[in-house]
Image (tube, rainbow, N blue to C red):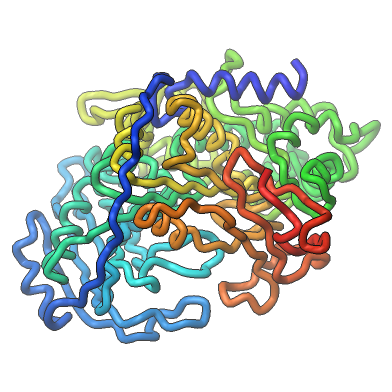
Length: 573
């Protein structure tokens, strides 16, 4: 099978796979006139912040532990003061587990601006949750803005368990489900009622956002709760997280098979070799968008013209300038898509992009499968559940059966009555996504092409499936933005700074479509923090159009005086 056919065979298969969809295969959803939602209106905090805890004591299944004012400037963003706000902390549904004897609760904080813009932002957090991350509500990659700075009331939670337990919280079946989706279901009505008490009215508009697992939370929320939120901002959405984790373990086993040092799987694909492959991909694909600029702008075209066959084969010992035939055989399925013992694909291909040479890749491919993904599969998602006292993550990852792992995340028993393939993943529900569209809500998704843990090609296939199920055009309510060179959520050799929350609000509340978006590189002196992965040959403030898929930022020498560092020299085509 040719490179071209391998990529498109996966794409066609994905369109019919319920695992890749948040909606069904029905492609005859009747077009409707989408209503225009009205803008939010501002309000001020009612009364004294320190007295709020007492007034919120009647919230159902909730304990408010504190409320205190945070002065302007105690939190900063890109050198600017975040305005004064009230910090409320609490918990919901505290209990003692009858499985492991640990205390569980959904702990949260809400930050309520003294001068509120009338909007609520529910912040989905990353990893396996377990920590109440500061509730600021990221507005997109690059730390340019956030929801709290813009005047939103923002909620953050630990999704129902303490990080001190690590993945062992998965022994408790309720904690599993809270982490999957039920914590959001429990928190949402409470948060809206809390806001109503604080301001004398509920939120006019509600938004949900996050990156990585936070992106998964966002996907789960618009699929399961389409009537609760008006706008969704999902970054690097790990919406098939258990399958991605097993795919990463699959990769670790392939690296081990060609490792020169069995105690270090990175010796199966060394830094020098990864840099060589990334350079070869750049040589072959850089100009597919019309210019050699250090970015592979047309990701799909690159997958059709480049493969490991284009990399020099070693005629003798490995020396970093070639790959052995054994390496090519071992590594090819990592990029073409993880497979079962019988050869059936269970996760997406990974794109060839410059991030193959990055430290991000090194972390996600050589460390994460042994320490993070193994714990997820063995303790949080699998049935039967491993014993936390004796569980050995690296051994599990490197010697376990991939097929058995897949079976475990799709299994149930009398205690664990919902499989991870259900509670972690957005349901196959065309009606829910149509409900999002039909009520005027909007979805914006962004994904780094060099993301080494969640494949951008998986998100492309989700969007293609969404499009096919909405009369071949979902752009009236959902947009996907690919970011070449960007790693997981941010970083990499990329222009990775852009505020997406502001255009999302404008789209939801004013009907202004998100056109003309521009992303910026974070060179030295950038207020959002310097990105050390930017090549020295780039301008520190390089800009590029952020194009809605399937369009690509293509170079136009007649525009912008042909300046390769300026977005004005490119257009979305």
